[in-house]
Length: 118
Image (tube, rainbow, N blue to C red; front, side, top):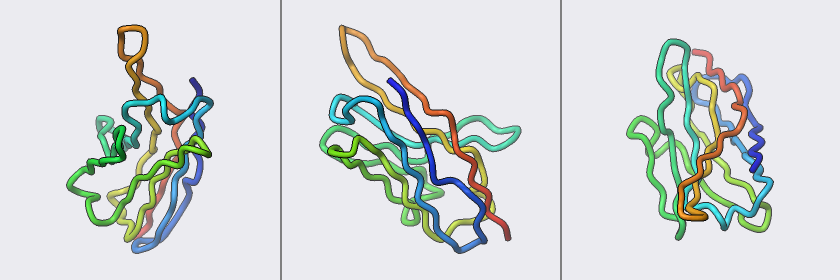
């Protein structure tokens, strides 16, 4: 499985960006997909995840500002980020998890940088 993230960039506080992650395999096969982020000196943290059935969970710090969605025909998962803040600056990683052959498998994309200026 290959995950290709895109859409990062530089934006001023209050602005918006949409990240996209293209999967080499059908997104229907994944039990969970999501976005995580990591800032320098900090551990990687969950931003948003979406499950089979399209229920989603968000980190408290982004709830109400970010929206995760999947497009199964296009095999993509996206993260719409509104009202961005400088604290949102990080490398954002796409993740996919699925249960197959009696085990969980975990896949990561290469990361895309998001920088929010004050």
